[in-house]
Length: 332
Image 1 (cartoon, rainbow, N blue to C red):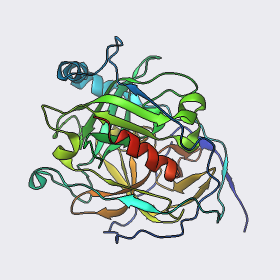
Image 2 (cartoon, rainbow, N blue to C red):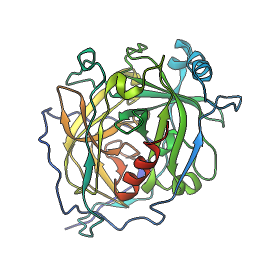
Image 3 (tube, rainbow, N blue to C red):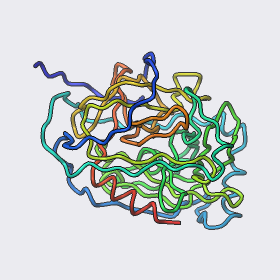
Image 4 (spheres, helix red, strand yellow):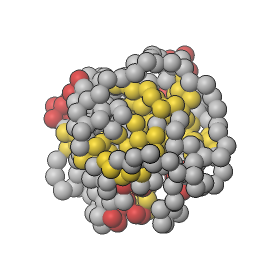
């Protein structure tokens, strides 16, 4: 088989979505993966902060973050710059990384009040934040089931600058954001966690970020919209549904989705030809997606796209990701 090197660039051109459908629930033993990157267990965490450096540690502080994000600022925010990844090689790999596992999705406290459709998931939302280096930016993310019921999963570059930089500020998550509408309110970040290798060296093999959110008017995020489950140590080839707010489609103002079968992206990643550009960063890659609830099992998050604007990649979710989620998922 001929091996093809695929260059990576910041998120570019679109690709058409494929046929939708409900995926059967299955956890496949004997996952295939490449060699695990060094420092799997190493993570770093921080409290969330406003632009002035004050912590988001009270309802009043969370309200200040929400107030910062006026309709005008939201509209003007730009897609977050996407890290450049080393050229990968699509190839079959057989090394195994631990035992496959998953945690289940969670229902909302008032499940009947949450509306999902084939084209929109209530657990997926748009992220807004200020980069301390300058400018307001957007990413995508999703609510994740955890003991705290306050957890969001996104890309590492949506929470931390990397390369020894610092954490993003004025960070909020708006579930089911739709053209300026906030149907489930606004959830300000309370604390962050990412892999140390991302924070120190922008390691795209570990471009994963977690955010514990502050309750909105006393209601926790997962109580409001429900939460996806997590799945790890899976085969590189698996049926997947991706949701995000790509800036190259509808200007990132509404959710877009793509369904297909992932492939080995090389460099400890999985790949899918979504064609999602900037703004899609952090959107969930779900297996076992349920059209009725809009929830599934997160097996990755959008990280990069190739120079042709076709192939998106995600870090491979292994024991290290599961351990990081377990640690941050208990934070309140």
